[in-house]
Length: 232
Image (spheres, helix red, strand yellow):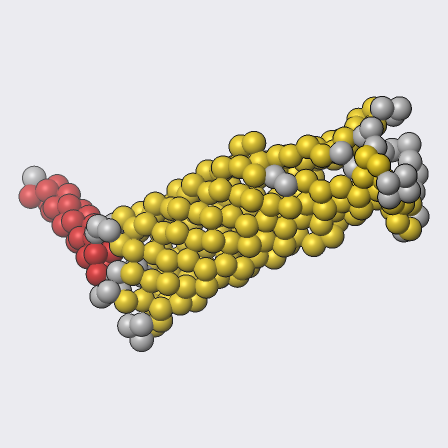
């Protein structure tokens, strides 16, 4: 009976030691792994320019998506020399109503066309590295960040004569920003970040019946995140 109790006693003590060390670790500083949930607001601009066989066709348009999104983040922070912070994070976001509809402008006739263009930014994935400083007994930090990102966009180009053409694909780019975080309890921290993303120029087919016609799309956006994080 004593031998049966011994492993369970060891297990209880080990679990207690492990959870206590995690709590003390989180209480003392911002170092270590974390998981978080973010609320973000996106404000973007996408410019379109139609080209035929690589030559400007004179049709231009601009969409301005805006909307809120929810995201999940997973990361790890390391404190160096009791003052410097480095870290890495992966995050994914789902946006709601981050869309816009616009009418292309024809430079050839100096008038708006009867066509319409709509874009809807649905998802974003980001991989980020950060570097900064810690203060307030290593419970607070300010930092800059940079990385790469991907956005899933639904695009619809509508013409009166030929109907709709839909493009639903990922576009890729770079990002940079800054942020701040503060530990409010043993395991919970609050953060705020502002991130600017640039997805560069992307060529998409406008309509399958237009053999050599493409839309050259250029998307940029800025997103402000407020996050609640659990530190292990």
